[in-house]
Length: 192
Image (cartoon, helix red, strand yellow):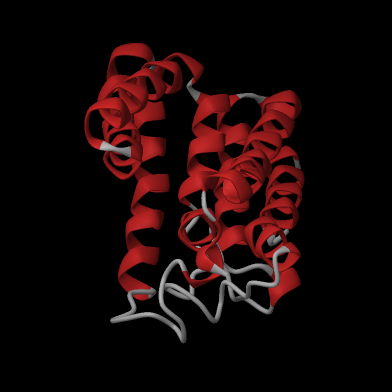
């Protein structure tokens, strides 16, 4: 029963289209601009960092809250179920007719709850790489290094769970690949 509750809570939280709501505040429809993805990265590209930070925080918070609820209900795997469900809710949101994002920030928020030591190390790595190469590289370094760092901090079973979550992200990238901008040039909203 704990798993079911964590899954329902996670899916409903994940379904809240935070990034799309943040962009809508600035009269930008993320489905119609940039890469068409209603997630935090497209919000960043369309709105700029100052306006998009709530999208990053909100998308991460959805899975973090779901993971915390699952941990409180029944331990790590119930927390993992909440995070997985939040990522699925973000990708196939019930509140946005299934037009969701790729769940990267949901993964980040969930990872902070499920493996805080690994998340802290990857955050430090991301900040370092950002300082040297820019935010895009720093974000990628932090996310892609996560399972390797987690091997040093958590049981291998948990690392396998992380692998499942990352595989979901990879599948979403493959399934939702677009060849070009949805309808306007990236950054158009930022220039407006």
